[in-house]
Structure formats: C-alpha cells, structure tokens
Length: 299
Image 1 (spheres, rainbow, N blue to C red):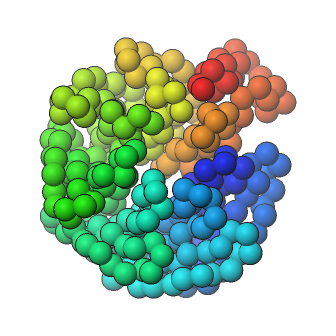
Image 2 (tube, one colour):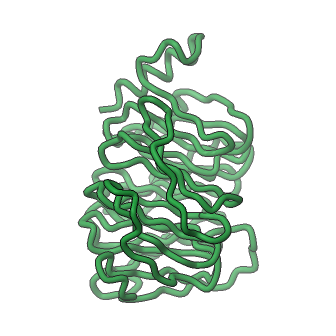
C-alpha cells in the first residue's frame, strides 16, 4: 500500500487479487481499479509528483499508470517472479524494484530501461522479502535482507557504499524525513535506530512479541510508528526510545504509511485501517484520544 504525495489517495494491492485499487482517504470510497495484471499484485508506488502509479505483479510485470486518466502508460518485465517492492526516487527519475529473484533493479522511470542491478545473497529464508528505500536525497537505495544487513547502494556509481550490520534479520526499514536516521525492524520484534552520519546504532526499542514488519516516520521525524506480526501498532519517541502508545488490530501488521501532513496513519492487514487526527466519530476512550493527539501534533 502507499499514500499519494498530497495525502488524498491510498493505493492498495493484495496477493490474491489482480486489481490495484485507488481510494479517497477522506471519504474512504474507492475511486478506481487498475486492471491488467495476471495473478496477484504485490507492489505499489506513487511518483513524487503524484501523477503516476507503479504496480508490480506476481508474474514479474511492472506497469505504470496515469492517475488522471487511469490508463496504462508503460508495461515491462521486471523480474522472473513476484515483484514485492517498488519505489520511485525523490526526483522521480528512477524506479527501484525487488522481488522473488532476490535482485534489486534500478530503472529509468521514463523509458523503462534497466540501468543497474544488485544481487542479494541467498540466505535460505523463504519467507523474507527484499526491502528497499531511497534515501531522502536520492543518493542511495537502502536494501534490507536476510543476511542481517542493510546495504546502501550508490545510485550514481552503482556500487555498494555502506553496510550496516544488525543482530537479526531485517523485516522493515524507513528513513527519517531529514535522511539522517534509519530505523530497522527485526525478526525478534526489536526496532533499531541508526545515526547515519556516525554510522552507528543509537537506540534499540523492544516492544513487539513477534517480528517488526512495518515502519513509518511522522513528518517531524520525532516519532516513529511500528507494526508487528503480533497484531500491534506502536508509536515511539525516537529521541528517547519511549513507547508513547500501543494498540492492537485483528491480524498482523505487514505495512504502515503516514500521510505527508501527518494527519492520517494507515496500517496494512485485512482490512486496511485508517486512523485520523481529530476524528471523534471513529472510536472512544483515552487511548484513542492520545493517538489522535499524537497524530495531530506530528507536523
């Protein structure tokens, strides 16, 4: 799933459905479906200008869609199997994808030319997916994998530039908005916070009883949301490691996203859940009031 750059739309994909759906965040209504993939759809990503949606399928096909018309503008083979990750660079020039063949590929987002590829080592853990995120300045693609590392791939030189070694396999990664901090979610439920300028781990937060699968920073970079296989979502103070709030949902939390204005937090699962600031009609209780306050104060 992914939230559009203007925060108005949410794109969702499901492994057992070929259609990718676009939702209006404020009304919770579906705007349109993007049809064309065979088998399930596994990856979605908005371009930085909000005009294009990239989707990846079980058949290894990447499609680019014009959001204003709903029409497909480009389609190309991106993998030998399932494409589970896709992300545009901050300037929109590149698209990075990863999937079942354990290869991270860098594409020209306008021409679909493959510019480079980065092969991940075989680790024998079938349930792990490659993780990828562009750094805030677009210089690096950070890649998390089952060899207990996060590797930074230099977009310009096409070479591995930095390696962070972690105590467990990595399930989720996220950059802070200023690009100075990396959060990594691990298979043992920990969340580690890294100071990238110093290249060292600054903080470890232990809260989930199962693997940490989703991570998202709030826009101010002071708070981090994490989602776990234990069906909990937690919000942390990144400077102190204090757990600010925790709540449970039905089923695991495979992904998290926060709107650019910080007013909406989306947690993946079945169904996808949206939580809004200042929305007393959604639920009651002191915990919900605290959550709304945290979201509303995130700018």
